[in-house]
Length: 482
Image (cartoon, rainbow, N blue to C red; front, side, top):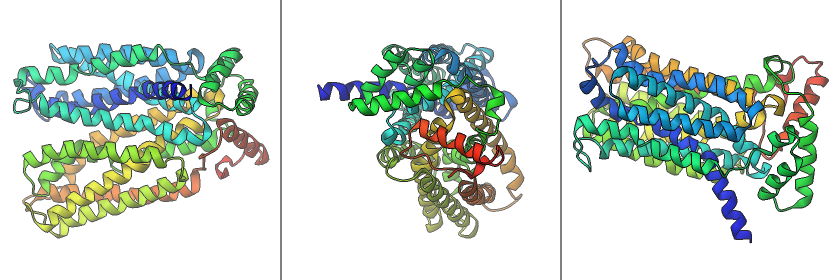
């Protein structure tokens, strides 16, 4: 019986996090598809239309996180997860068909809506299903799925290109690259039908017996289940909140923490490194073939490091992981930038390999710390009556920052690139990444001052601490919760 129960919880966690795979695949696959889309649809490289094919997903994600996330407090996490799967499927199908520019962009916006919804829903859903002592590792499954999706996107880009494993023509390959996302979307929908609803949501709907049954699935100790159910009932008596509660004094410490973590995760350069890794390798003196192959290696490395993070997430304090991660990321970017500026990195020389090693270390630190921890902490810190709204807010801020950094990178690169200089673009990248590196150290200050520890604490305990602290401070400075 124990084995059967284990398989049941594994099934739930797998399909609960599966939206992350679509999240990763749909945001990563466009890097390879864009090599061929412009030629078929007559889009000039570097034009607004060219850039908007990528940006449309980010804008859709902002919209999805803003609209669908808050609805989960009223309609339930499961229903909207299934809705997201349908939107994923329709968006992937439309992108794969891609008869013209308008159809492609519209479909990409739809995909973005689903991606944004997943980023707001899944951390909340996993946090509410997980026992306190396992919540970090289970929440990190979301990031593991994202990285797996990115890796699969890199593989499909390689295999479905004209010179890849299947040798598809440039007019056919990109359609398959984008359309293959329909498969995991369908799996998410049918698997999602079997998922339980969040016990917190069930209690708020007066379905205490169903909530108890769900809790018993994840914890075999009847006493612990009854205690948790009792705490959930107490919290559920609070009326559902809105923006007044989200921006009110009790939730303010979480709001500040979510805002800072969501922004810093992006301005430290994480997605810029993932998106532009091939360009960085070329600027460091390597061939385009090496750069493209390295993208797949980076994808594998991301998955491995994130899998390790799943194992250690509940053994190390969240604040320590964020601090060490920011320190390692900042040091790696400064070393890489120094190599590109001072050592004049060229093909195969010492400076070039320093760049590769530093970039790899940066990705390792991000994938093991800031990548998963940000989503885990936001997913578990907001009070129950505004949890969907709060997670939606964090996701909106994160996607907005992602959009701002991704869109500003090409313009900043031009501004920082010296004219008529050897390896000019490499020097521009190096100067830009010095800024990202310094922001990593600013993030350490933010962690110390404005974040509070959530590891090994029940969701109800976190909320109770927030309420008592706010009352003790006279609704003044809730940021000192520790």
